[in-house]
Figure 1 (tube, rainbow, N blue to C red):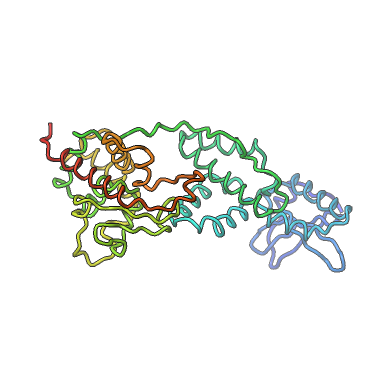
Figure 2: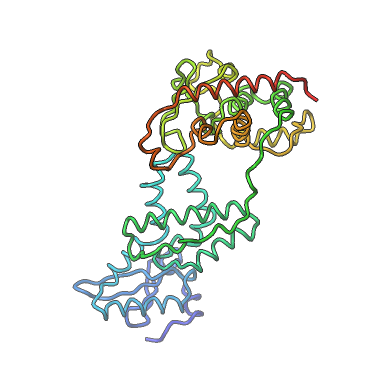
Length: 380
């Protein structure tokens, strides 16, 4: 049998039924009625085995021959190519990422899983979906990250690195086939991110608070942004607030809704309580799209009709504003962290299960009083 040539493969035409062309030593190409061409390694071991090598022309003739040679060498070493290839397919990065999303990411909030899925589908899986995870090297990671950096997505580059690092660590813990080390280990985030030190001045707070009454923004959306400023909650924690979580002056937020997966009790000052409409028939007093808050601020800052005259800020900067003014009121970082539900990873914190309700109430009232004083001053 003569060896295949590229011109011969290109000229293979579909027929009324599927047929095969043989080169020898079990190397074949199958042509279906639709014209699809696929390389196979065919051998006998008790029965005839067909092991797929790849589809032509996505896989070149040269690469197909190389893979065919690898499979024959497997047999020489006493291995069964059909079993080995099945294990390699199971061991692809695409399968590892799928396993990570199903078994690990589901322990977090839906937004966490969705964010990981978006990162993978856009910047990782198009290049690594069918790559054996144990064959991905540090140089491959660098090439992958450079693609994201080259389009100017600095922060996204760091997110991609964080995501794939977690996936490889997950694979190591799960004894993923052939995976012996994490190629992302000790890699520094390559993207340059802006330092997050933005908070609103007193004049900006007054401008922000008064702005919404002159716009067509839904009151629930405006109230949600104000609620973040009044409580210091994370945007996602405020957006998905359920009336069932309200107990008088307190919010009791379950662990599943918290970033650190720990339940959180928060005292609501008078300003915060006044932003929740008790007569709303639905369980959620605010809209339920995180990106909607950022887009609302962006549109208002760019509006020609009634422009929000405040330099760039995000919903999360409202939370930072609360922390900053509590610091100005004399509270220590550790106390502010309790109100904001920051994670304390110290050994002492694991033993200290006190909820600090008195301190939380004191800080919430102090911030409510300060916010009221700021809003009461005339705007410049």
